Length: 128
Image 1 (cartoon, rainbow, N blue to C red):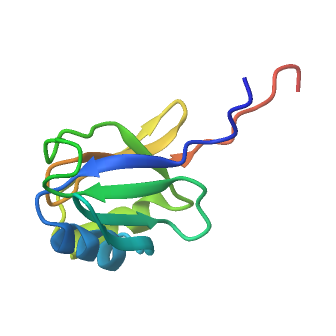
Image 2 (image 1 turned 60 degrees about the vertical axis):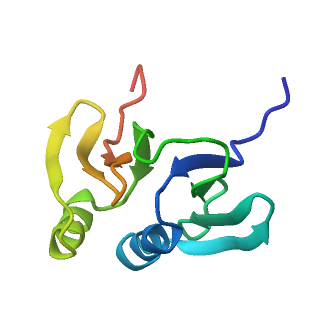
């Protein structure tokens, strides 16, 4: 196998403009593509410098159901600061909680897609 990375993750949304505002204004992502094509708008966003982007798939694009995406992990250097920013923007956040692999919180985008924030715990190497 010669797979190097995931190209994109589909996030089904009901209103692409509302989702775009959330992902850019609240999460700080940048737009990587915004094209009109049959059967609809191809809209992608990503954190600065990310290799994998998020496709905000609107009505008519693939038959996805808004809010059905779950378990999307976003790694952050400061989960507490990001949770405070989300709360200030009116986003309900669960956590953050300390777990064996790091400090983690969860929240939903305006369509109900489930996202998580993680500040990874530095793991000790075996034998050190």
